[in-house]
Length: 293
Image (cartoon, rainbow, N blue to C red; front, side, top):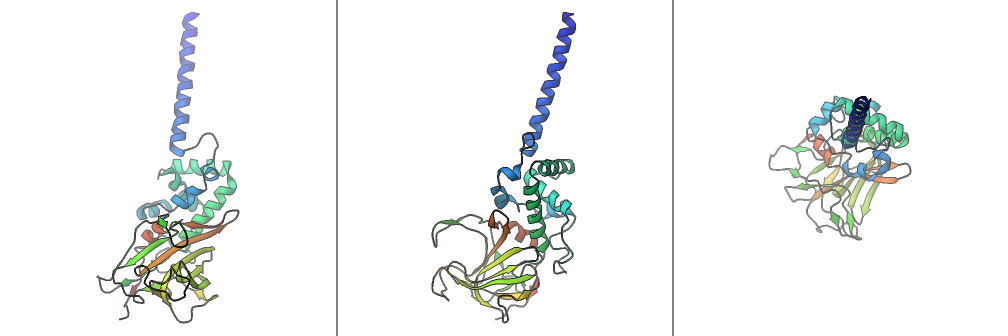
């Protein structure tokens, strides 16, 4: 009897140990304990990490590039809910394993269905709308733009704050030289002078994503509030306006385009998203322009 008891005690111990190992593996893989939700626990993760995806990983996960093949205006190329869920899962799991992504989505839908629906809608909106890189390719190879991930870097004009966008810096420091085109279809919601942004344009897409273009030197003729815009349409020219209450002020910083992405989320208000990774995905979708002298 003692031997049998010892045998079953060992078996039960091994089963319990295996169960603990499996639970820990799940926690390590998904950052979850039981049915806790990553999305509901830390909404700031989305604003900081939601677009951190390599271009080839995007295509592998959802079977297409953002905005379709780059020839359309974005309409009819909307990501499905399953695709957007897979995309969202990969950003949190840091994995491309199908079974892991499916499991993460299932856990989130059961633990925090409203948060999951909101975040999937964000993925659908941003990646379905984005079609073209905002600065066209010049015929002259020396005329370029560069940018880096400056998201939430410190800015001091108007008070210390985080940088809510990405700056595309011009190799040719000449205001009014670089054309700026709309990344998406949409409607001009805001236009005019802002002390921080100088001459800016804000375009709201059909998915309610707000694309913000700042520090422009001038606007293209006919652009005003309420104007319907198509993806790739010329909206203005890069400049160095802003950082002043006095309209028309220039020269406080180099010529560049500040590009931002915002979305009005229920219960959270207008939330800013890191546009750096969207720009990287759109690198392959640049229009070709002959720049004016």
